[in-house]
Length: 97
Image 1 (tube, helix red, strand yellow):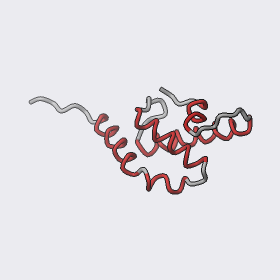
Image 2 (cartoon, helix red, strand yellow; image 1 turned 45 degrees about the vertical axis):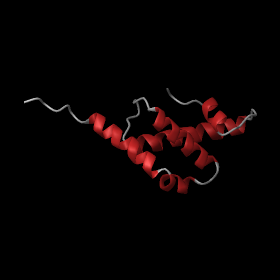
Image 3 (cartoon, one colour; image 1 turned 120 degrees about the vertical axis):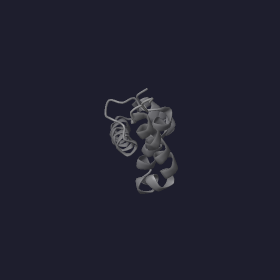
């Protein structure tokens, strides 16, 4: 499932409609999505897992609150876990022999 602006607004408890905030959050979602895809080795067309989508939402929260420099350090375990699962899934199957 691809995250939407409404998903981000709900996660950040933005309960009002404001065109400027919507524009800002749309940009934040785009940047967070690209960042998470890069760090977990997901392609642009890959479907993100629930864990990866949660990382996108958390990255949005950090960016929105001007604290993105702390994100990688605080979510290192989750990032490494998601990346490891992607890399393992990409391995060719073992041949029987």
